Length: 226
Ligand code: DC
Image 1 (tube, rainbow, N blue to C red):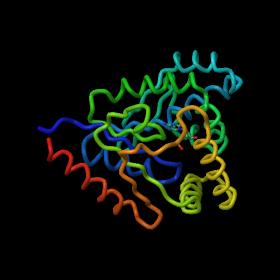
Image 2 (cartoon, helix red, strand yellow; image 1 turned 90 degrees about the vertical axis):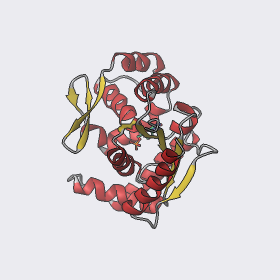
Image 3 (tube, rainbow, N blue to C red; image 1 turned 60 degrees about the vertical axis):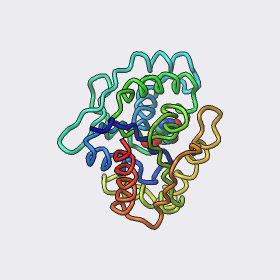
Image 4 (tube, rainbow, N blue to C red; image 1 turned 135 degrees about the horizontal axis):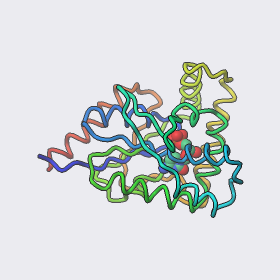
């Protein structure tokens, strides 16, 4: 049997990382680790506890004490923090914006990267994020960098929020995606960057099935090499 792989999927928000990493993990029987959900969970806890988002020391303590777990529930993976299902709460537009701030904090990154490395070290995992192929697992056997135009990503986010009953405006959603892109790409610590050995996929004009097929082809080829 081939060795279980570490698969990294990086890229900006709305490029389809979540849907695709979930689909790929299901196809391969691998574990899916949504690292964005981890940064979102820290942002949610910090705002609830009124912790200033520039207090690196308290944020680090918060991460160290946080019990975070991904639990499979039917076909879905839910995020539990300190025993509470926060899967919906971490997806609100407010938490999305605050997460960029929290994700810029070096102590938060240090703690969460450590957790991610522990979760993934045995292989058989698909990790999605911004720095998986560059910082968390530079040795990952397969790295994808998934992108799409900002308008297309904003439109996808808009539809996703609407489907969940969240009232939003399309132009504002595109603008929020742009603001988050800027924050994630220009921050000092572990900015969104493509690993030099990543495989680029632009999903602007492709549907999920087409991208999934491309990814599976790469994975099968790699697995066949043993
Ligand atoms: O993928 P997402 O939209 O759920 O990510 C939420 C935020 O967390 C986004 O601002 C980028 C940040 N993030 C990060 O800095 N590093 C990661 N590995 C994953 C997410």
